[in-house]
Length: 246
Image 1 (cartoon, helix red, strand yellow):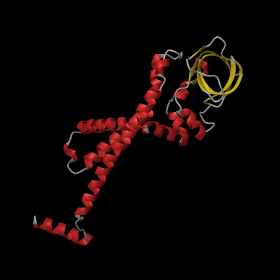
Image 2 (cartoon, rainbow, N blue to C red):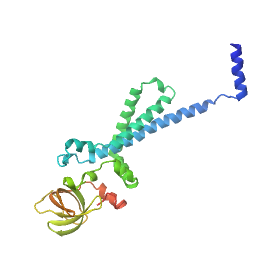
Image 3 (cartoon, one colour):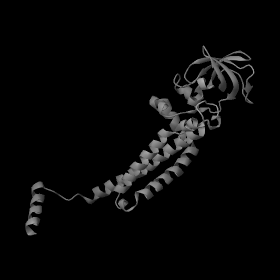
């Protein structure tokens, strides 16, 4: 035993090994605590964006697309933000397990606590409008984000399914007008015999939602005309014209 001790002491002297200061362990532990807490905050932001996209989706129009209700519901689920939430929960749990004493808690319990805190804080952030602001900022500044998330504007840019929306750019007559849709394409709209939602007005710069039948040459015969209730997409167009804006 003495020989082993001498060997260890010899290694310590040879390699000049010195004990690590206690403050470094404490600092590393606090960094892990901060990272674990940050994961909860980031996850709650993902929850707020998820809630916004879920609420903003056109659930009541599930019967219109020919793809059917199931496909419509599947398209409306914000997978991107759910994946982000899951990633931050995993990161938070990993950091928590590395905290002093964190290994004593069951991972399933830690996941449940992280998810609960993320949902509670995310709900508050959603109510404050952060979810909409976060989605708006990413869509305006990160082009690939538009391909990862299905928005209300995507739903209303399906003329082949009889769904079209855009901003009125010219009124030709009482039953004919031009709109520019969210992809930047111009359409001639015929609205003779169409039903109009109460409060809808036909004037320049008015954004409308249309149900109807497309024809050759960017002509669309509307059967129903509704108001575009969300101002978000209209505001977004000012900041980033030519992407998905009418």
